[in-house]
Amino acid sequence: MLEITDLTHSYGDHTVLEKTSLTVPDGELVSIVGPSGCGKSTLLRCVAGLISPVGGRVVLDGTPIDGVPDGLAVVFQDYSRSLLPWLTVRDNVALPLRRRGGSKAERRAAAEEALSSVGLHGAGRRYPWQLSGGMQQRVAIARALAYRPSLLLMDEPFGSVDAQTREDLEDLVLKVHRDEGMTILLVTHDIDESVYVGDRVVVLGRDPGGIRAELEVKLPSPRDQISTRADPDFVRLRTEVSRLVRGAGALEVPSEAAAEPQKESEPREEDTEET
Ligand SMILES: Nc1ncnc2c1ncn2[C@@H]1O[C@H](COP(=O)(O)OP(=O)(O)OP(=O)(O)O)[C@@H](O)[C@H]1O
Ligand SMILES: [Mg+2]
Image (tube, rainbow, N blue to C red):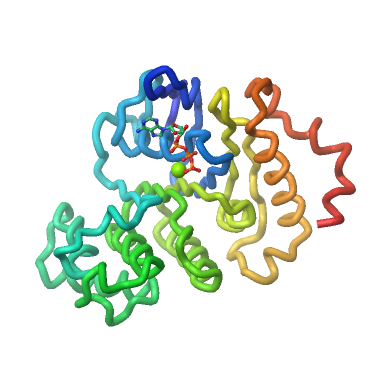
C-alpha cells in the first residue's frame, strides 16, 4: 500500500503541491492527469524518493520513503536522459536487474524477453542513439518491466510514440499489470488514455496544487481499444475528466469543493451525448 499524506512541495517561493493526500492499495493502476505545470512530475519524484518534499510524507508498505525504494521502477517523461549511450539496448535493460542478483545470462535473457514484449525483438545489440525517439522510449519501458517492480511510476510514458504503438503499449501495460499485479501510477496528458488504462483517475489542479477529483473507472476488464472506447461509460468518464482538467487551472477552487464533481457535471449531462 502506498500512502501519501499531506504532501507539500515548493521550489523556492513557488508551492507546487499543497497538503496532497492519496492512498493507493496494492495492485491498483492510478492515472494522474492535470494541466501542465500542476505538479504531476513533482508528485512522482516525491514518491520515487528523488526529491524530499517540504512537508508531509510518503509511506510504501509501512516504510517511509527517503531515498529510492527497492522494488520501484520509473519511466521518465524525458527518455533521452534515462538511457546510457555507452551501453547496448540489451545492457541498458539488464542493468537494474543486477540489484536482483542472478547470472549475467539470466539477466540478458530477461532483458531480451522484455524487449520482445515492447516490440523490439532483435534490437538488443544496437545502441540507444541508433534508435528513433519512440523506440528509445520503448526501451525505457522494457527496462522497467524487466525489473518486475512492485511499484511502477510512469511519467507520460507514451508521449513520443505514434498512435498505433501507443495503443499497443497501453495494452501491454494493462497486460503486465494484470499478470504481475504491480501497483502503477501513470501520469498522462491524454484523457482518453487515463480512463482506458486506469482503475481510478486522479485529477490534479494548479494554484493551489493538489487533488481536485478522483473518479473510479469501473469498465470491464480486459479492456479493448475498440469496444471499451465505444462504451457509454467510457465516454461519460472521459467527458467528466476532460471537464475537470479544464477547470483544474482555476485559481479560486478549493480542493475539497472541487472533489465533489457531481454538482458541476449534473446540469451538463446532455453535453455527454454530443461527444
Ligand atoms: N527543479 C525545479 N525547479 C524549480 N521549479 C520547478 C522544478 N521542477 C518543476 N518546477 C516547477 O514546478 C511546477 C510543477 O512542475 P512539474 O514538472 O511537477 O509539473 P507537471 O504537472 O509534471 O507539468 P507537465 O505536464 O508540463 O509535465 C512548474 O511550475 C515547474 O515550472
Ligand atoms: Mg511532468
